Image (cartoon, rainbow, N blue to C red; front, side):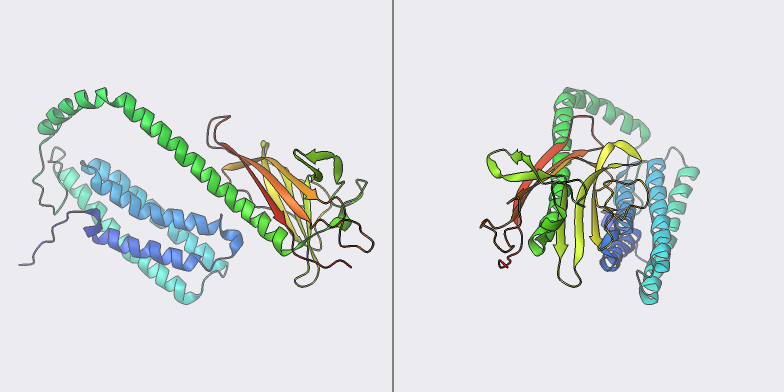
Length: 352
């Protein structure tokens, strides 16, 4: 007679083990996806994959089979979502046929196990709605509904005395996590701008004394506090000489779909539009996460004029101070705001 495996943890479940293999495969394959999909298809596939194992684990911890089924069905929905996303990635040529077949094979395996798991739970629930709350194949003998209610009645008295402290702890922890996520997102955006400033040069030729210039006026009347040699501009203009000379432009615009949300946009190439924030035909790409709003984006350039031109009497090496103010769109108004500031030198260049 075949010996039955004792299930002590959700990690002992075969359906969780195969789902775990699937999420590891998703992370391996999406590493090769284009960078522009980092906050698109890559992020969606990874979140959906994690949701499968998370719902199986949470369903396992629930006491009633009715609750378990709810989480197992959510896991099944996330699995179907991953299958659809792999079809999209294949059509976009983000993965080859070998990787696609491997992924679909693993998805099929998980699908069969999860369906069997759901079927087993439904059978137990329908055959005896008042059955003991017991994990299948476990060594736990379970307890009756009456015993559960008596136990809960005793626990309620204890829990009510600690509700105030619990709510306060959860609220503080939520705010701390929200601030940490906002900080991480802000540091990521800042790192993109810093990398471009260090690797390229300020496009002084596109700053001028009139609005006809692509990058507008370097406004000497708006000096940075505590630094009377740095003036503010609304758009950062750089030149990339790594290959054919290309423009790099950063600017803040309003989201055409949400007038209360600012977004950060970037353009790379020779055809960057001169229009500040067009609603259509924009050659700029939005690089702001969907849950963020850019409240402020200022660049302070020092010195005002190009120090590398012939006859220049300025000997200050060019640098840019970035001031970035972000807010979270998933919190209450006024909550979760952050201001980041960093001064970055441009790459070295000899005076002509």
